[in-house]
Length: 240
Length: 221
Image 1 (cartoon, each protein chain N blue to C red):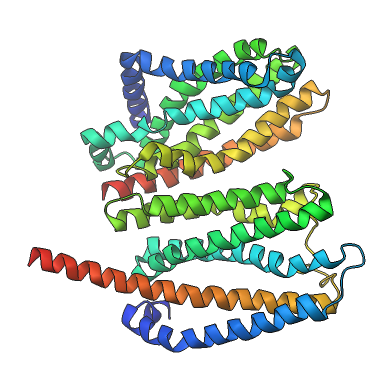
Image 2 (spheres, rainbow over the protein chains, first blue to last red; image 1 turned 30 degrees about the horizontal axis):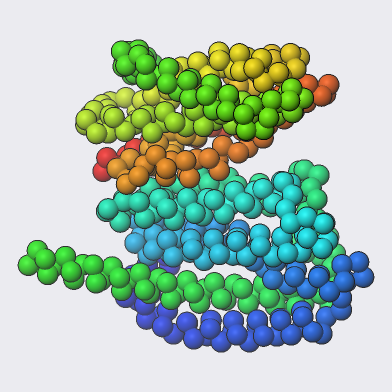
């Protein structure tokens, strides 16, 4: 299964088919999610209108962790089975994941100022998300630090796997420590503790963020494959 | 084991013959800490409050300073390649090099730390805990740092890159190292922090040499 789709030519064919679907579902889902979230859902009885920041903040934070997990899996597959496509996927995910992390931190700060009275606190959840951003940036820096691109890929794959320890820390930071950041309210053992009128737009936005990620990922992987081809052609020209 | 000892001896010999190089790390540590009274002002209360954190941050930066050389010199003169070809497991070789790094940089930092704590007017009750926390924490720093040092082999601008890679991973050690000292000074138990620091060390001891060896292997390939 894995080996079937690891063939770049076959992947490119499938990617061209899937990509418009991802694009359209992103537009439709994000449209519906934003309408429900920003216009038709109720304001919170405590937080007022600023609760609507959540519809961007929470999906972005989920995606930040999802992207890193995806990178770790791709990097592991790339290291073990030496699939070129897995390496490309990990490399293509990094900037997207870094943007999601930044978005989560930024919207969190915007929400924190009216709610907590401060842009930033050094609690466990916020700090571990900041570390995640640095891990993304470190990965991007390391992947581009070598003259031989394949060296950069392998070195940065190991780094991703080392940095993965941070992901469970982010997830459980609100349970392990007494943080200012509120604990999980959607993914819980006894069902979500959030009203359906707010849960629906949140879930729609989460799926929209996911399809957006896949959309951008496909574009980036295709671009990377094309760039590799160009590099090989150039080398062929030089060496005759 | 004999392989481990011979690598350790070799690295220690090299460090001793280079003499001043290791002293420079300690001097950096002292200078970095001494800058703080000028930066935040010499009021004893403020200095006492931030002493543990400043010493930890400076120790962390100082131990990072020498990490770049951990594999770099051997990589450049080709001896790292020969070491990977030897029958000893590469993980053991890496662990020996990390041990040598800790003995030549971590240990001197621990010796210098109480002196700096006096300069920063730290509460004397915190001294034993500062040393204990550094004893538990600095080996983790060397272990984690070795992974970064292996990954940057052969890259452009290795030193700056190394900081970007491993400083985020140092944060947990820093948090619990400082809070162990602050807890004792504040009159609380600090067993939990010490246990967590030990847990980091126990986790890093098998995992980091493994990851660093993988890093060295991909650099040699």
